[in-house]
Image (cartoon, rainbow, N blue to C red; front, side, top):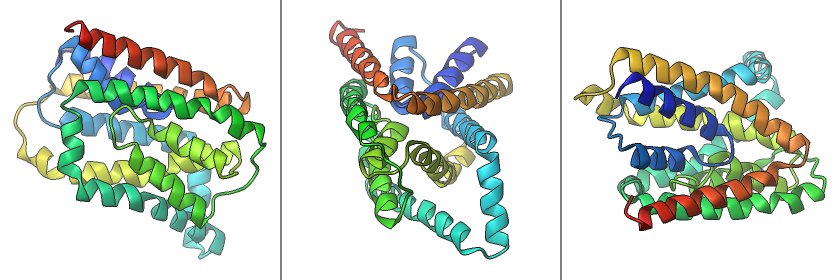
Length: 262
């Protein structure tokens, strides 16, 4: 992997990890179109941890409040943290139980194209959900169902942020609260995924050089911050559904590319 490829993949990861257009789907498409074969999991783990930094930067006040509240034994803080943990259970269970099958989906590039069409479809329904003026906060039911949406996003091409936020909106959760919960529930998910990859990381083999690794990580982190801010801004403006047509166009174009022998 050269520096240009690391820059492009870091940019794609940072933007699509948080915008509701599926980072996994775009990485599959990017690697297929650019013809990049990334050796090992070092780069993947690095850019995912970099996007974790993006969340902590944007939601640093919320994270600090939760940390202080937890240390002081405040019930609301522990309840919210408990909901975040609860929301990770469905994805963790499916990831551990069907890891090999899910990994195989990444080998078939067409899966990402089809899944992007599905992502576009549920993003388009956000118009109706936002039209109901949701104003609630996440509870146990909301955490479990948003967690189920996160598990659905283990399929490449299904947007994690899009699926969880749209689910939250339809359950009556306030738009900004749904976004905050979605991004914060990604923290244990990203950390868990990184921990699961540690044996493969230790197993080594080749991989990108230090320069490519650092560049890709920095680009992913900075782009991630901008992506989260864009995501929240579009929710506020009730233009969130506009990501739907993009997913339809991207998915259709990629499937056409594959059909033509790309």
